[in-house]
Length: 357
Image 1 (tube, rainbow, N blue to C red):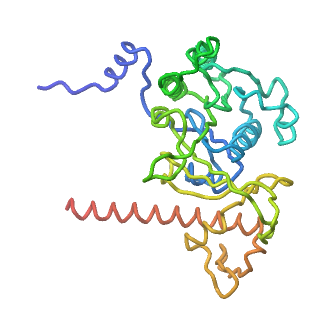
Image 2 (tube, rainbow, N blue to C red):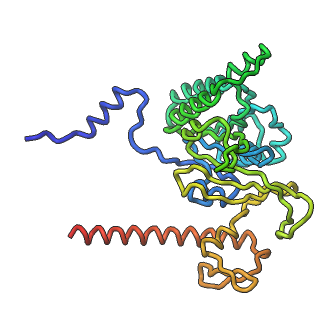
Image 3 (cartoon, one colour):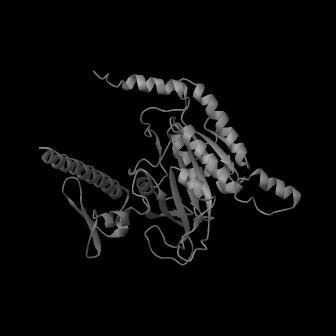
């Protein structure tokens, strides 16, 4: 008689013989809002989630596109609201205390640690050293941690420094791209089983490719493949008031965001974020057009309507849609999506059952 396979024994033997191995699933448990409901949804598939701990998320964009605002201010602020300690690595020496506080970040020493680093190797040493100590803690004593690097593009290699000191600026022959890839790969492996995450900004540059005019993310493809989530941001001028009326002067930033990579929703979905200079990020940016595309809103004459949860028809001009309407629309959309998914599962089960008989 053949002896049955003992999966428990196999699992125990793996954990004993291989030091750095994780058994089972480690889905993210903690998510941090970007401050934009639609961007949260495009990244995570949920309007209230955003970026997860245990993963590496990169926001890459042009100068003045809002990437530092999103990462070093908005995401940091929302992380602190959830009791997550932030380690902010400033490679550009540009994150002033007054600027962070004006955007709602708590700069108290028990809430945030700011480090000024400019070498890729030093960033790797800081994270590696932290994780060695972190792993020694008991599960209940491990705090939730978010590392923020602003930005990857400004980090240097030893070759950069040596050439500068010699006055011989020939370039690093691709060493930086390799070093960034190694950094992100190691961080992904180190953080995967713990409530520790990394959010980083990076630069983009204009494409020289005749067949692809989209901006290219600096640092090579390696670190993009290694990252868990990648959002590309393009800077546009905001020339409208709060009601959407066109103006001649620039009143803020319109950040065109494309989720280039995500495992939690469809990739390559796009949206535009409004960041007025006087009031900051509009969390409901892009929701109106999104719900119109999804059929939750329908146009009737010059007004737009939807049916709320109690069957009442709501019909308004676009400029009159407000926080309450968007909250209701997000709930309706999520409920419809949930019901649709459940029906698809039931249909698949039914088909499978029929084919098995």
